[in-house]
Image 1 (cartoon, helix red, strand yellow):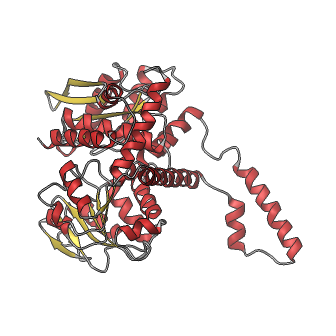
Image 2 (cartoon, one colour):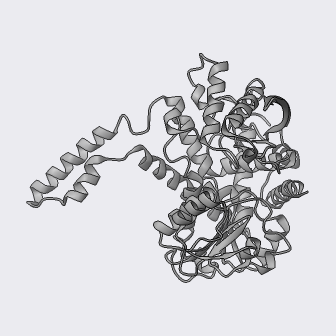
Image 3 (tube, rainbow, N blue to C red):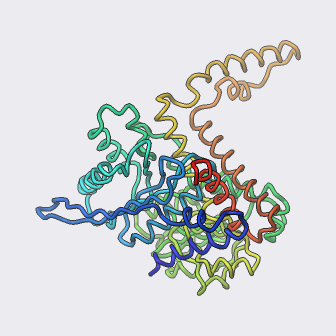
Length: 467
């Protein structure tokens, strides 16, 4: 039921934004409807038994190819959830202008029920089933990690693809989110959380926007509550705390939350959670068993970074945050979205806020196709130019430049610097364009404006191919 509600909410948000476009009803239907969803049942012999697993791969749109979207391992997964997530991927890619359609995959499994060798065996079998249907292919469909999966699953999938197509020179580009030593990109694991940080920073660069949310100053010192300390929530909280001097006053997980009005040590909390499986007993904050109630605590910014539909009509009126940033996909239902807008709570929507993962996946895909790391050709040339410039400045002024500045100039940008620079630029530009669309079309909220931007771009792509 929850997953069906997720798909329904996504479609209702689509319909709401459609009113602000000139898209015809028949083209709107073509954009909205999922192109195809494959249900795959396959067997794996483990523990002297044949276990049958069910998975899905949904392709929402192929207006641009390849289609892009993660694969999650989760017992709560369903066809409806996968189709909703695939749709969000389509809109997300359109907003940040990466040349992808939207896709998504899931395997109905609890990874904790199996050992790592067993997960590898299951993953490789699932990959085989997807590959032979062209649902994994550098030019057609490119997965990435999601809930319950990581770089190691992606490396197994890439290896299976290489075995099946040993002469494909672009085989590594069949999947993103791989380990750096297996063709992955440094900075991919942090990308979604880093993107959340960047878009919050961009929000606070616009005085009109942060004042509309009821803020009087910049980002520094703001009190933030984060739901979910997985990959996305952890990196978003860590960077906002360490680099922007925000106070992470609450971290919520499914089995409890920790609070500290003076700010939590995110790194220490994560280490404790990994070791103990809970925050209970962590001496850096007070423990609350009922974590869902903490969504309604007093804070400046709420970052739901866990599951869909965690804010619904039952708790929306109790939300006290001034700004909600959707690091998770679909954490707010359609009805709750209306209620929060009525309360003048600003929402930076998922299709914009958590697009950092697909942005850096795009960089990784391009790098795999280019077969050369970013900055390889120009780094030393740039270093030589800066060295010459520094020498010229020192000669003209008669003064030496401090060593710390010299080192920064002469060393030049590493690949991680270029990746972060590109991500920052994409997140800033996405926010600015959505913000402009909101103002130019008198749209009441950022989410509807983001959907309009996405739908207009997708419509142009369909028009260019004759639809």
